Length: 70
Image (tube, rainbow, N blue to C red; front, side):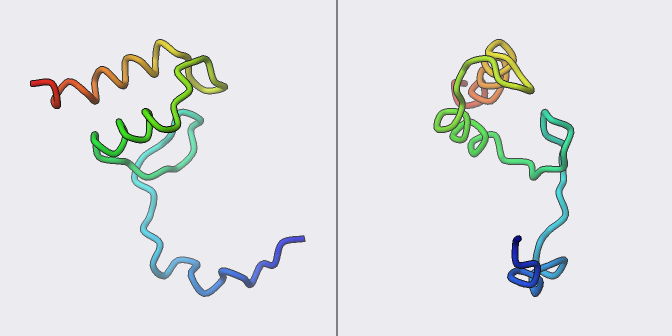
């Protein structure tokens, strides 16, 4: 069983509210284009996943990289 009081002092005090929705439909934090591109390059598997497929990931990477290429 997890210790519920371990992080209780942080609950709601310094945690900003989520500002976007992820592919699974859950609350998430939006990243800048540069941070999102870096995250894709480090963690993206460029393959089918549970919530997205390789084509969608590639489309998003192209969209994120377009301003850098100009």
